Amino acid sequence: MAVFDIDDIVQSLQTVRQRWREVQRRSLEPGGRDLPAREALAGIVETLKGVLFPMRLGPPDLRQESENFYVSHALDDALHALLAQARLELSYKVRHDVSVQAEATIEGRADAAVRAFAARLPAIRVLLDSDVLAAFHGDPAAGSVDEVLLCYPGVLAMIHHRLAHELYRLELPLLARIVAEHAHAQTGIDIHPGARIGGGFFIDHGTGVVIGETAIVGERVRIYQAVTLGAKRFPRDASGHLEKGLARHPIVEDDVVIYAGATILGRVTIGKGAVIGGNVWITQDVAPGSHVTQAVTRSDPARPADAAPSQHDTNGTHGANGGSRFAAGALR
Image (cartoon, rainbow, N blue to C red; front, side):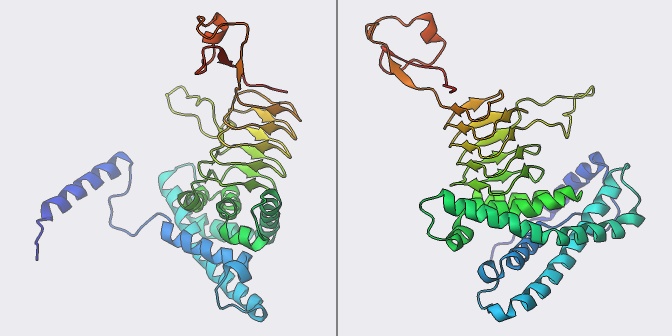
């Protein structure tokens, strides 16, 4: 059996940890873990999925006549577990942020936040029902609403987001981010918990979707894979640090469709009913009802195929055929 000489490695790791804690002004006193646990949050979310959709995401042996009994006990377990994690986040804030209120208020604040979160669960279920229906009606390949709920990554991402957004609103941003990142890891869909998303939201396929912290999305919006609702630039303060909390992501109004690969950056507004074509790049407002399409190739019969490109052509991307050029993205 191999014997590893690990004593030096253990000591070196301790030195690295101590250096980090000193730089970050962390306590060097012995003590327990002072951060929420990813594994605990994952278990809480799984339980809450069963609470929200007991006969579809709850235990496989659950019977309908026992539905309320299961929901009652599962919800009680989830809320007590969430309360413990909320205490950890609030305690962490008190220790590492002098602007946060004294530790004596932690218990009351954690309790109030978890009670408010629990009270929002029926409204979250209503929103999720609208998301499931949007996916079912928006995808011709969807065989049933149950298939959508059980199988679609966009719906899974939205379950996590609806829960995470409530935690974010209740000033538990670390818990919210952990919940959101569990969905990101499972689906490839990255939605910051601060994003405000209306009902009937459908993400088709999903992989590569990014929605930033201050994005606002209206009702009945549909987006496809690899869509980005991102920031255009990141202002810095006088000391050179990034400014936090600025409104820097798009506003997408009701009934907008955004096709695969579109990138929308900055605090721009995509007007109601607009359709954004695939692979376009948008950094300015789009009027309601507009259709924005990607660059298209068109032939120029007036010029021989071997002619040198004009100044107009060199401003775009030249096609494979010397007599073709890409037109600017069309807005109609």
